[in-house]
Image (cartoon, rainbow, N blue to C red; front, side, top):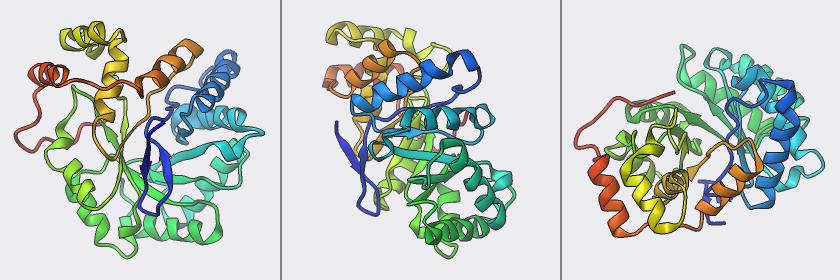
Length: 278
């Protein structure tokens, strides 16, 4: 599995596993944990979750998945903006640690920017770093101007990543945010790399590329995201066959013809666009 280097030198899998919508039904919990464990076996050792997902249910699934093999997983979680005060982020982190039954989160993110000043959130993250509760921190859903704001607060330059929506349908970050992150040696984590509601996966350009490669449209979409240096893709899979398909996407290499067809169907941005979010 190809890796991406975080600013502190840590190497993480370029293809990880998302957990959005996991932990929302007790009947599926064991199968979801099994899927995450299979992903670990296949090299997708980065697992992304959040206190928001299933109101903690997804973190509990992650805890089940990594039980007895914590050292194999690089765990990312996210704090609600309304919990991101200096004291609030400490309490939220403790709740996440309890749900996952671990003693440290490898990468802890602000889920999106809220009313709490960034300086206060960064101070809270610094406290957690000093206490050994987290190993690194970052943000999610911040646009370029907000990243500049972040770098302007004390300690803000320690941000390790920005997790944003990125797929062929939503490529606005290519205009300025992706180059900004590259200039600051900061990886981008691409959530929903295969889109939502299946529309992207029915696109003729992806279907044609899938036929050429003997792959699925979802695998083409994942490979498209991974073509970018410094991008980590975190698709979700809740069953074994889907996990195996996702893992196989890491070995795909799109051709110039594939890229030209996708660009024609989903043109790269020619101007600044509002940051897309889910």
